[in-house]
Image (cartoon, rainbow, N blue to C red):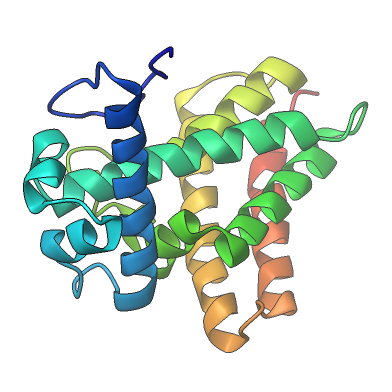
Length: 204
């Protein structure tokens, strides 16, 4: 059986399918526990227990809880990018595609434990990436806008995308605090802000 690629930063690269699946199980457990207890209230031992593995198995691949959650964030980004690429409406203007991507993000925050864990704990704001101001979701939007719609890949565009995903993340968290399924007006405001901030960068 072929060992699937492990696109996460791990201490030890798995060489067996069972080990690769164990990493995914650890990430699933971390997302589930953090979504329930919050990042601060979750320990590495909690993650190991939820994943039904020994704590040594967690440390075999990740040095600490933050590294586990960074891998969850990486997996979220990959899943988000795949969905946006697969579901983006054909022959639509960039505004419609960005609006659709925003809707995908909101829906994943509603239904995906990994997204609920990261966004709900406020981790996307930078706690998981203390040495950089980059946001992996901003990279997904940058690739989409530059490759598909001819936006110029400039530092100002990158800065604006960072603003967009940061504001959207805050408003999305607020939306789910205001209403269990998401306060629609707050969600709509996030979408409008996203599109409005990007408009000055659009190709003529």
